[in-house]
Image (cartoon, rainbow, N blue to C red; front, side, top):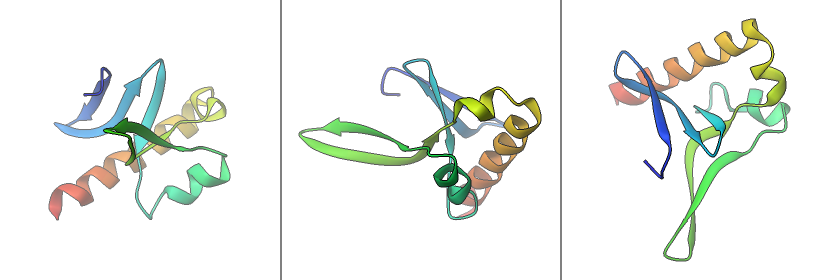
Length: 86
């Protein structure tokens, strides 16, 4: 996918790794965490148009805090569960 990797839990996508950055799955339930941390969504260009997907960059501070990282990862899994049920 986009030359990157998809991280899955129980076969559901929870994260994207691209260019040595990790992006967790986001929806309305956890988006404010990412905004508050100054994060941005993953985007790419396709035929001259910028496409934004529902994955946001995990901030360095989160990556360096194991407890927070696991909490955010579980939230990303919950997002994927909800999306899968739709």
